[in-house]
Length: 280
Image 1 (cartoon, rainbow, N blue to C red):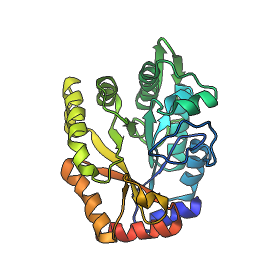
Image 2 (cartoon, rainbow, N blue to C red):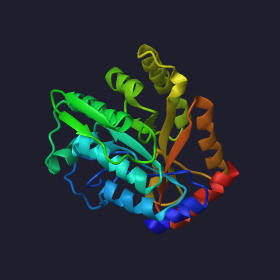
Image 3 (cartoon, helix red, strand yellow):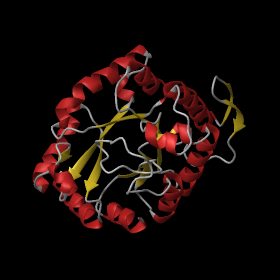
Image 4 (cartoon, helix red, strand yellow):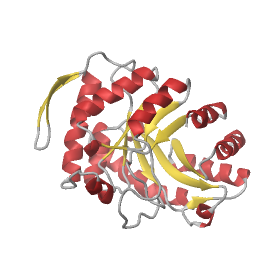
């Protein structure tokens, strides 16, 4: 994985993201009703992220996204400051309420009232990272804590909130707490699916009294060079030039960053992605 990250740095990739799952299903875009762990698996995200932070120099590192239910929010804030320190300020803290109930239940986590838990966790994590201390008493969490020492980024690392949907309550949390918003795109004609989501995000910002332009936008897409995913409707395929044009089209609909899930996820795929970046 360190070799993979080094290859990504060398070809001009700007961010490297890890998913925060304990098991993994066969198809990340069509989640079957299966038990966890499945035939595929992942290493724990934050342990791995710390290792990658120590073995890279330039590339930003992020979680896409960390489920706040998996760790106490005070601990999560401490972990984020620590990894930000190891990386010399290259962390992007991606957070979400958790979208995979089967995994949560299999590993012993409750799934009740996910948005309520998420809202309180966000208040604690952002309060600690941005102000260094918090005194909080909510329905699900209590915290009277201070971060010492502090990481290298004033106000803590930027916070990205991932949302598969765009319900008003979650988008309200994006407008209140996030520096960046992320959505997963599963249609290869994906730029055309962005405007309604973008408009909903803008409306949530205005409702919260926030200028929409202050929120950075990102989407995650699948790019398949070979294998079974190349036949799936959710994957972007074609020549390097065609993929470069398709990725560039996201900028025209107000997207600042695109996270690319590569299939197959190999060093040769990363090198080909570098050629696409050069074409862009």
